[in-house]
Image (cartoon, rainbow, N blue to C red; front, side):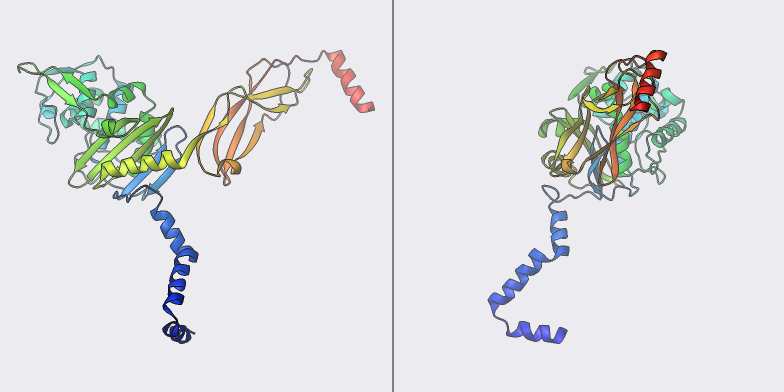
Length: 388
């Protein structure tokens, strides 16, 4: 059969050969899949690993090697800042230790014995990536770098970042210090729920006093996206020779926030912007349930009437073109709903499914009060239904 095919092609006209070539590219499923995969974003992505995530739902909109363990350089400081905000107070006064002052790498030029508030150190940590600030924070919160790293690992597990391990608060190279693009997105997603964290990472510039010097320390945010990408509002850069260029970014448009993680990304700025563009252009934030929306009717045991069930809150989810029509919803109610009921009592939930997977749920509340039938009326109702 192969010999006949060769013989036929040799005798074919150039026009026929061109037809075969075009037919191969347009109708070969494997080639179509390869082209679709290559056109998923607005450009080539250089990152070894990457994740684009919807911050609110946690849905991953684009990924490459999301679970590959890699060093993450100074993006480590996202977890450092998160723990500092959760366990410390920004007004805490911290005395800089010799170890903190002598920490190698990027620095905000802290000096041994200098006193700084936790707030000042957080700005130095996240805007100028001060490794010295990271150590000072770790020692203040946990007593030592080692103890703080243990807290970082506990927090990572609690957030579902099971392929992450921290050994320090700054991200300097260590074989046992690693994460994945998925895990770092999970950590960042949680951090972005903290209002003070959001304030700090979106600050373009911050000034810290420098006693004994004729000028102050001026911290300029190293995140280029804040100036170059519409809606950008975070979060952290990173680089070591081992990790390569790493970046976690976020952007919000019309109340919809996406976050992007790129690890070992030679073109980290271009990668981040291309992936954010992909998310905003190919997905829409859809309202699946609206607070107070009537969902269904439920019978009430010994109640004078049935009860309207309404959604407790808004539920949004990012969907690509055509996906909304595929959403399936299913109410899951309490086994028995008994009177009396007040307005706003939780009576179940409404679950949403896409391609067989649950993508979210919203609590269902009683939309109005339901009184209990008086015993006489209840018996009369039972007898009436029996004789009917």
